[in-house]
Length: 361
Length: 111
Ligand SMILES: Cc1cc2nc3c(=O)[nH]c(=O)nc-3n(C[C@H](O)[C@H](O)[C@H](O)COP(=O)(O)OP(=O)(O)OC[C@H]3O[C@@H](n4cnc5c(N)ncnc54)[C@H](O)[C@@H]3O)c2cc1C
Ligand code: FES
Image 1: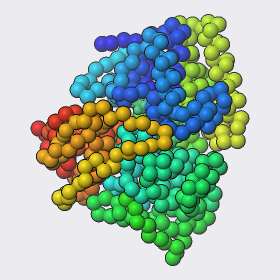
Image 2: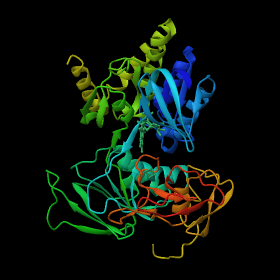
Image 3: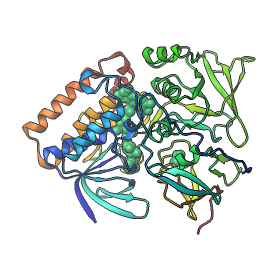
Image 4: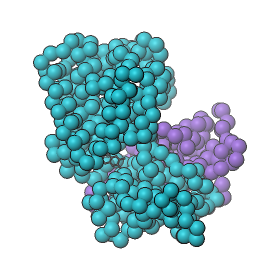
């Protein structure tokens, strides 16, 4: 059986930073990702990132992925791409599956940075071909250069819904409308304004009622909703389109943590069930750490910082702390605190605080 | 699935304000026995959608059509029969020359 010091599961911004940090400090690190190309969500982000200046704000996601990848290549991290971690056996043994074979990898510490999966929404026809996750549409358009359809209804006006709508227009795909059940747009004003300038209607207090079509989407019925999100009678409108894109949130991909027996908590502010973790990003299972969206849906900059914190602590747990590791942790924590002071972090901070409160129980 | 004639590769983005798509090698593959073309480096799902194909399978009990949903190997919506192998997630399966792709009916047939 193969062995390593630290195994990092997931090669998005969190996993990449965890691996780079631990490896530079001198740990033996193995990074596993189920894609052939590392970078996680970043490889389909063609827009310039929002966030803090010192955290690649203004840089496009795809370019951040290349920077991190180059940094990783300069370390001795062993990368296992195209491989899913499908299970965890007692004694920190990971089950790995690639396209043709199953194998095992034993590690002393484990950093879980698996990110998140897109949510679906309940409405008749939500399983029809043509109803796609917003991230899926991005992958198709921005990674493969393929149009998912000709005319799209976007459901959800958070940043993801707004940004993907803009990217659809860039790819010469019509966006019929963006519908949002809340009475106001939930993403940043800059993104909404860009769309408005292109003439894309953003309909607040509206939702999708039904997807139309037999073998695939041919249209959608939308309607107004009241304060309790119930449909307002006689406000239905039928739109002709071939694609419905769902941008209604993400759920942490926490299967490995459930299997590890980590203490899990349902925290809506963090996107669903997350593993309880402390300031070190360590779960209640010694030697199992979390970082990035799997520890609470947030953003790439915080995912990178959490990755650094987790990577440095995993190193310290195996090899003891030194001035360098302490400095990395101190700096990353300070930066995390600074970012989370912003008004858009209120929800996440509230969620993370709930975890802290749980600690005593 | 109803027989339709598809205009080939109608859904490819050729001009984009930010991205350039380097389409290396053209690859021939088969969908329901018909030859179609895709490019090296893309997934089977991307090649199918580029060719206007969105229905990948029909479900076991209700015979509902399904296409892809997450495109990152997380939801199992896109299972197809690939070179005889059922339950292949085509959204993460790289396109290979000559590969035979069939829509999957229910749980598919073991080779
Ligand atoms: C449309 C959109 C726009 C965004 N814009 C911004 C922005 O402007 N600024 C910003 O800061 N953030 C932005 N974000 C958020 C940011 O992309 C995410 O918060 C960030 O990518 C999370 O990083 P991560 O490493 O936790 O997870 P991910 O990037 O999701 O990476 C996780 C990786 O782990 C892999 N994986 C999962 N499970 C397994 C397993 N069992 N075995 C092997 N591998 C596995 C996944 O395939 C993936 O590659 C945006 C997100 C989206 C969708
Ligand atoms: S589309 Fe979700 S697994 Fe392929």
